[in-house]
Length: 172
Image (cartoon, rainbow, N blue to C red):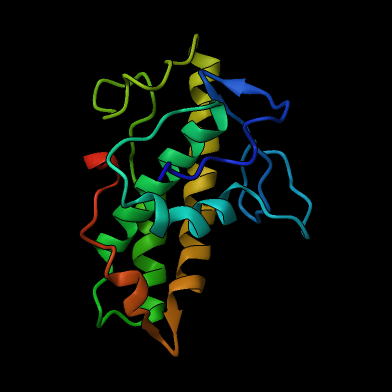
């Protein structure tokens, strides 16, 4: 059974490096285009495909939107690792927001674990654009993930059982 790929691969979007700048429904500052509030965006897609895709060791990249999806799935794994089954929803929100804005590597940085799959930005301006976009995605994903996985103030066991799983045997 093949992995699930992004529905945004066929679109015509601006690229930075070889990642698309996909529209996002967000309230955080950044350079992502605004998405239609009634349509699914890449963050919704990453959350809905996470549990199926994290079981795969291989993932064939079919477009630049898949690179965004891979990054978001790896970030979800990192977020789930920060939360334990006794973490209250408010504390989880604080922890994940701190994680989202903490210092992180982007493609082209020596410490970025996926440099083989991602092209480095061509200049300093593109590197700054990519950093802003990725930070905006991380902040929005952290907020929506807490809203998704918490049921009655406690993390859902159907999400937490994936906290030790590594997508493609990688981590950020």
